Image 1 (cartoon, rainbow, N blue to C red):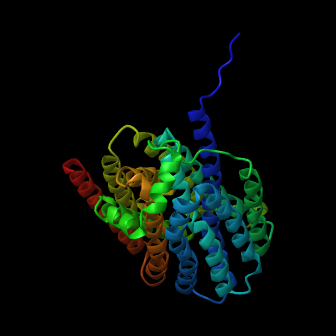
Image 2: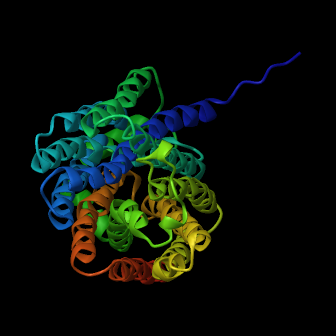
Image 3: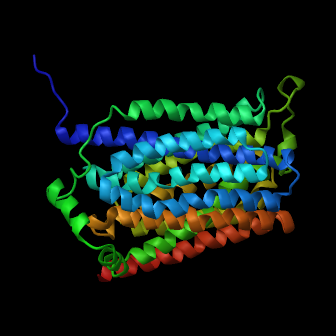
Length: 415
């Protein structure tokens, strides 16, 4: 009788997957609870959607600001310590929301959360790209965990708000992060197992190469085009995820479902939003697995083109009725997350291994830092213009990313 044991390579992949899936799931769990709470904050504090949107955008900005130093810290000290610190800090920062005395206090608490949240992605992406042998597949699992957190965050927040005041809900939402941090302390892995040179050589290369030289390497690669794609994705993602719960609540198709007195407080739009995010799990899986089989430039082109198309169709299709609304929401959710593992792999493909932490730091500075402007812009469009205008503008971001993906493919084939 023989027994089979997993190879060290597979065991290392599993350990890396476990830690990064925990961190990614928590990041989006916290992040996507905020749009549900934002609806409550607009009603609870004497402010309009424009001001609340601007303050929340300022609170989100540190996610992008922290990404670059997070990537540099990951290159310098290794991603494991950075990831654990991020998990602990996110939990602490989010719990601080429970103490916020005003909408400005909310912004400050979100800024604290954002500083710790911002270091997650460059560290996590760097770890997968240099440590995981099955990079595309681990990116897919990583993305699916993020979408699970993305769905659980608003689901748990909306459900808890049926019973508790929002400050209590904020405190309760922070507790899973504490448990994840304790579990993460027990996970062990080799962060450079997928790099050709030995771990010591890779570390020495990072240490001895001046930052300005690593920056020049990135500028002379195709990374600037990848970064531009990520920025437009960030503007799209931040805008649509911040305001979609509010938009869904106000659509004319919503009164088609009448909630009984026993379920007062339940808003169907919140749970449609959760469903959209659940569909995104499939989008992450398909995008991640396809990135191991097709050119990522092709996947990015098709994904962003369809994302722009379904954005333009959202309002007119939702106006037809409840069933069409569910369909267009599902399609929007699928392609919203389909493109994410694609551009994560694109960063790995078009950057040197020694600059990987720096490159992902810059990437998420664009995704979450500049992308936070999508929240402020969305507040202006919804507050002063219309829902249709909002979707036209964000569709424009997707189509600009489509053009850049085509350009990336052309230049990639020529290089």
